[in-house]
Picture 1 (tube, rainbow, N blue to C red):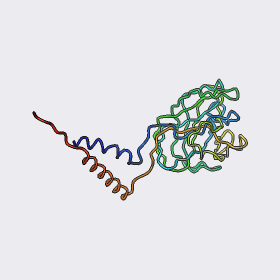
Picture 2 (picture 1 turned 90 degrees about the vertical axis):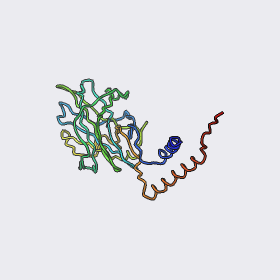
Picture 3 (picture 1 turned 60 degrees about the horizontal axis):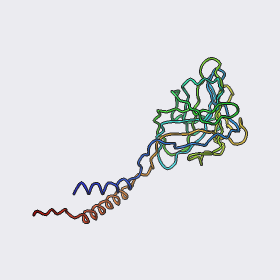
Picture 4 (picture 1 turned 120 degrees about the horizontal axis):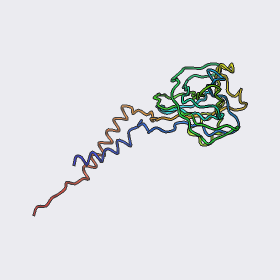
Length: 246
């Protein structure tokens, strides 16, 4: 009988308890490329230490655990992806100011065809995985820069977004993107200065999130009282099994 009571009460706990983490998924995706413009986002022989496009995303209402970052780039046939990429997550970025580095590094990356081939180039999704970065609510900027391979490696360009197919991209608007490149004498310069018009780019964040709701002591008391009431009701309704002996 006691075992049956525990099984009946368990669903109430699962449904009532906030803040449970979800499985890894796309937490943010700014949308598919618009096929109109792109901006240098690369590390190769030509640019030396490269060029990076940063754009914003918002964490609201909970905590994110980031396991991966990706960008959509158009690449020339001779880019020769080396299998590594530079990634960075920052906060407090503004014109001419790189803000605070939350997580950053050069690490293994993968590339897959994304099906968006523009400007005579081939579209790739460059993904950095295996991360474990915790983000509290706030605004952040990200970049993922693929590295070309070999002497004479070609070019890579970050796609602007059309917002089609976006995930949680409502805050990803308003020219909050920046371009950082020693080669182009740009230090977190507004990206709109280089592409004209608005400048929102195709990129995304993968990970898990929690609701961020922690029960107050009074709420915990009410929750406990409610569960006890449910349990009492269930116990009253459950009659003991009678066994007849003939």
